[in-house]
Length: 620
Image (cartoon, rainbow, N blue to C red; front, side):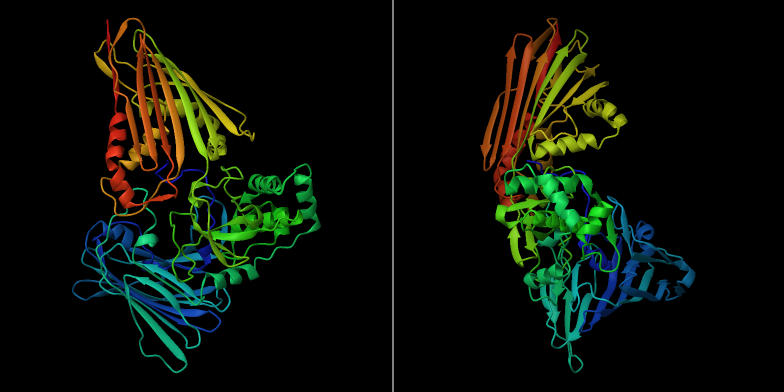
C-alpha cells in the first residue's frame, strides 16, 4: 500500500498544453495565502461559431506582505503562438496615494513556456512576463490583457476550466458570450450562475465565485478538482461528443513498414494477448518520449508512420503507433483519454483540463496499455493510471481502468554484528508483479556513481556510516521476478557497551515503514486519498556476538482491519533475534475515504508505534 504518489520515472503527456493559461483561475492546492488579496479578476470570453474567441481579462492584486513581492511583482500570461495573439493592454503599479507607475513596453518580456521538466518538448506555447515597477506592501498591481484564439483546439467547440485561487478573493467572475444556438454546458461548485442581458442572436452566461474557507490539501489527497470549487464549461454536449472530435483527427494508417514490423515482432507468439504485450513493449522501449506541440499538436497525434521513422513522440503518438501495430495483426484498439495526476473524477461538463494523458485500450482483451510508462512492463499500469475514469475515443464510452493489480516486494536482511557494534550485512530483495519492472527500471535509471552510493545514503538515513555494493539480476531482462542484493558494512549499528536500544529494522529502506509513516502523517482527514493495493514481506536477522546480552525484544503485534493485515514478530534464539513484518493492503479501489481512515486510525497508530520498536542489548 503506497500512500504517497508513485515516484516512478514518468514522461508526462499534457493534452491541454495548447488550451492556454487560466491565469488566476488556476488554483494551487494549498491553504489560504493572505500575502496578497485578489481584489478583481474578471474574464470575459466572446466566442464565435467556429470556436475561436476573444478573451478580455482585468486583474487587480493587492500586496499585503513583504514576501509576496517576490512572486507577485512579475506576472506571466501564456498563449499559443500558432493559435493565439496576445496583447498586454495596460499594466501598472498603483500606490496607496493613488499614483500610478506604468509598465513600459521594455518591461514586458516574452519567452518560451517551460511546460514540462520531465521530457524534451517542442512547442509554440509562449509567455509574456509583465514586470511591475516600484512594488511595495500596500500597492495594487493592475493588469489588463486581450488574448485572441484564432483557431479553436477542436473545430467549432469551446471549453474552459477554472478553480478558485488560494488567495483571498473579493471579486472573481467569468463571463461567456456565445451564439444563441450554441449551448454551453457547465458544472459549477462554489460559483453562482446568472444570465446577463445579451445582444440579438447571442446568449451570455456568467458565474461569480462565492468566497469560502480554504482547506489545506492533505498528504496524498486526491486532486482539488475532485472536491473543491471548480467551474467547467464546454460546448460539447457530453464526453461522447468530445471523443468523436478527438477520434476524427486520430485515425491511423497501417503502412507496409508497420505491417512488416508487427508481423516480425509477433511471429512466434500464440495468443492475441501475447502479441499485444509484445507490441506495447517494443513501443515502450524503442519510441523516445518527445512532445511536439505545434499548432493543434496538443490534441492531434502525428501519423503512425512518421512516429516509427522518427522513433520519438508524445503519449498520443505512442498510442497512434501502437494502434497501427495492433491493427496490422488484427487486434483492434482505442485511445483512452485519462488523467495522469491524482484526479479520480471527471467534471460533468466535457472540459479538457482534467484529461491530460492518453493510453491504449484493447476491447477484445479488456486490456489497458501505457507504452509511455518506461518503468512499467506491459500488462501492468503505473499506479497513477489505476482506478481512473477513461474516455474511449472510438466508441465515446466512459470506462474505468483496473483499480488494483498484483505487486509484491519481499526481502531478507542479515546483520552479523561484532564485539565493537559494527556489522556486516546482506539484504536480498525480490520484486514481483508490477514491481518487477519498476524496480528494474529504477535501478537502470541510476548513474554508476549513484548505484555505488546507494548503500551509503541508505545507511546515513538511519544515522549509520558505512558502505557496500549493489548487485542485481539482468537490468535489460524481462524475468517475472527481479532480485537485487545489497551487501556491505555499517560501523555503528550498536553503540556498545550499552545498555542501549537497537532499532528493530526489518529492511533497509523499508517499504512498510514508508507506507505506515505516510498514513500516520495526518491525524484527521477530510479528503479522499490514494491507497494502492500492495503486499510487503520483510525479515531481518540480527546475529549478536557472545559478548552481548539481549535484554529484551519487542512484543509480537497482530492487527487486522478493513482491507489491511499487519503482522510483526520478534523471536530470540540465544544471541540471535529474528524480526519479521508483513503488511498486506487489499482495498478494492485506489482511493480511501476519510471514513475509512477514521475507522482504521487506531490500527495505523499501532503500526506506527511498532515500527519504533527496539532490541535492548548490553555488553557482558
